[in-house]
Structures are given as structure tokens and as C-alpha cells.
Length: 205
Image (cartoon, rainbow, N blue to C red):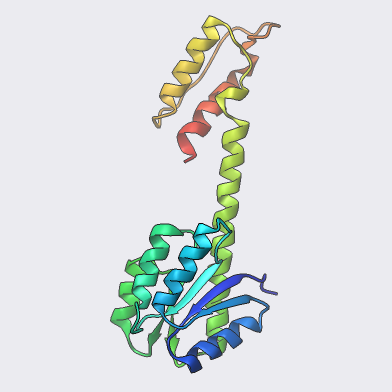
């Protein structure tokens, strides 16, 4: 079963908006609706100012009088890049769909609505967001685990090792740290740990 999510639905046609809201609510999603792009931009800005988690996805019609779907897309790409945007296009409007994808939309939905196709693409977008969030979490944990701050040793020789590791971390160079293994606070038995620290800094954004 699809995991429930917060989704913003935007359409200036009440019938289309109501139908999309109904389709997505059937899967247990929490739906917020906006009557046009201008209202959607206000809702998005307010959500951001509150510092909340934001919407898990945005589904918006492309053609609207008060700020169109592409304006909404541009705002999300700039301010909430992790949120997938699905733009609704008229049947056969290939150019509009291609333009939307080029500008950062995750995917598009064609009218008239195909209920199964809508649920499939929304589910795929939500899975993509969750995987991206999990990937960021793992990278953050790796940075913390292999931070140079976690390396044991405070002598002058170890300071040189830290400085070297910090410099090479900015490059793609492969580094091997070697040293004498002895029972002391500065034991170089932690060489592999220092090497992992340097590697993790260079490869994790």
C-alpha cells in the first residue's frame, strides 16, 4: 500500500481539481488544494516560512490564468528542490510536457485523467523523494562517523596527518596512510580510519 503523503493539488478548473483531489485521497494522502498558481505560491511560501517539512509532492495544471504551472515549478525548483512536481498537460501537448521536464518537473500527467496512471506516477514520485531523503541521511551519518574530529591523536605529528587529510579530501586522489603501530594514544593502527575520514570528506557533499 502507498505510504500516505502531503500533496498540493493546483488547478483553476474546479471539476478537474476536485477529481484529482478525490483520486489521490483514495490512497490516504493528505491533500491541500489551490485554486490557481498565485494561491499555490502563497501556500508554498507560507509552508516554507513555518519551517515545516513541506509537501511531499506538487501536482499542478500547466495552463492557469493567475500564475501558471511553470511558475509554480520554477518556485519549487528554487526553494524546495527535493519536492517532485508533476505537471498536468492537455492530451497531445508534447511540447508543454517536454518543456516542463527540462525545467525540472519530475513527470507529467495527461488529460483526460487515467486514474491508474495517475496513482502510478505519483507513487513513483513519492518513492523517489523518500529514497533521496534516505540517501542524504546516510551520507550525513557517514560524514559524522568518519569526520576527522573522530580520529584519535593530538600530537604534532598527528596534526600534520590531519592537515594532509584535509587537503587531499578536496581532490579525487587515492591516499594510503601508513605508520608505525604502537600502543599509544597516537597509534597509527587507526590509519585505515584516517584514510576513510579523508575519503568520506571528499566524496560526500
